Image 1 (cartoon, rainbow, N blue to C red):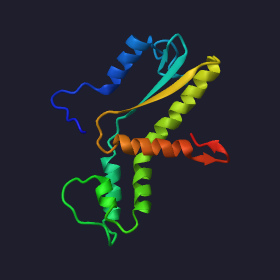
Image 2: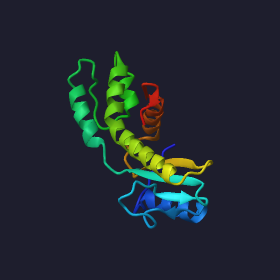
Image 3: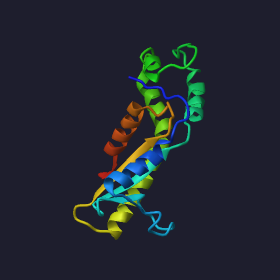
Amino acid sequence: MRIERRGPIERLTPRVERFLKERLGGVCQDDVQSPEQRRVDYVCRNGLLAVEIKTLEEDANERLGNLTDELRELEDWPMFYGAWPVASILKNLADPEPIKRKIVNRLGRAVITHLKKANKQLIAHASRFSRKNLVRAVILINEDHDVYSPEIVAHIVVHALRNREGGRLML
């Protein structure tokens, strides 16, 4: 099911921050620590939960547009008008997997960059505030970019979490 929003739309990030403060007793670390330090955004539940918020604010349409310009040169690339879901296009190609990987790589750069930064901030926080039962979480917020569908972002995140180099996670 798809829900369309109309009229003035309140950004999602302030609503999530309000939830963290009001419902989880979150304390904004920007107000507590110096900005030079690598820090998490919120500490909630009396320090048991460290939360880093990352927001997809950059529109990836230009990046994806550059890729589709390249893909139009392929012999089996379909002709179509308007916007189409990527899955509808891929199912008509002889070998969709390499193209799917290219699309995910282009879209995934911003997501992966956010995850890597968040991971560094959460590790730094855990080293400064050592608690045996500390829970660390990343909230990745899409501020209204259709290209970053939940399915695409989930695929990118799952792939990133499985990706290992020398036995260690890449993130």
